[in-house]
Image 1 (cartoon, rainbow, N blue to C red):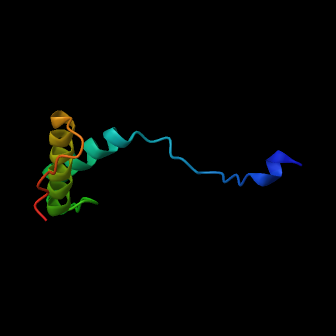
Image 2: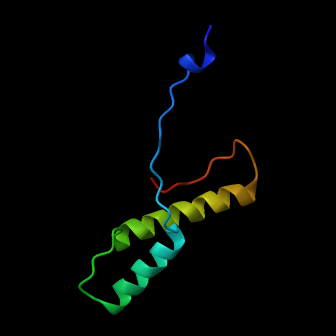
Length: 72
């Protein structure tokens, strides 16, 4: 049996750009240039922040099986 033939290998194209730097540059541009439209809307950013806060709250509780109100 030829083991490499059993594997599916897919080449991924990965940018060399730094994601955090790009986020910061986009934020600064949005502050300076009021016509610039960021890739993420304010509503989407707020939703992501709220989700991250709920994840952190869940981790801090560190209690498995305890229900958390996700506001759904």
